[in-house]
Length: 256
Image (cartoon, rainbow, N blue to C red; front, side):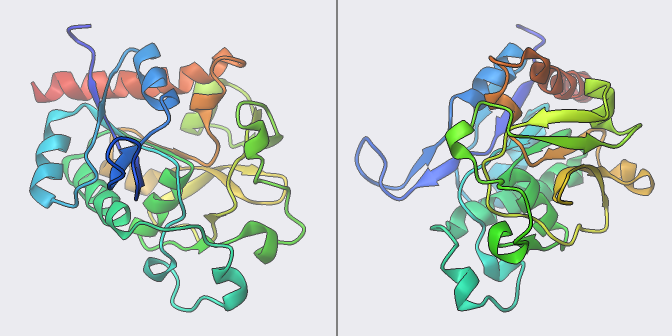
């Protein structure tokens, strides 16, 4: 594993951790296990909004993985939130939001490969000025039920993958079955991105850089589903991580 790239992973947080009941990072081990299985070395980032720490961490890594977790604070992507929608928002963590916004800025500045999963896709869109559905069920009543955490490692619905996209190159098919455990999603897609997969109700399930903005990153893929949870039942999803790790390995060689 001497040539395996370091993959910087953003964690979730807990106000009361299990050791000393203080502020703690929290991360499903499915993420680092997927990174390791695909040939990378997982490196979990401290949730510390220090521009200097983040800059040095990104400099040393081969690529960055943005993970899922709690809702993003609505004030950074929506000016007005009705009481009806506010009651659907889970506990937010402004420290995590700021840390990941700084992380995204540095990833783009250094042109490092980026894989964003679930909340990761959402915060990436917000970082570039996009907006979110704060609750799919209330804002799109005819939408599919995307909040199926009870089936987190099982196929819940199909998505349509756009030809010639990075996601299509990974899987080689235009219809892909995915899991679904989110109640928020991209509403207005930020300018640098193009939707490259959608569910039957129009929810954006994958986003990549537009052809005119490819210079921002050598590899950027954001997905709304959780591929790390599907690997055991559906090994084809490991190919997504292999694609990402290969890009990170190339970046690591370039910066040595």
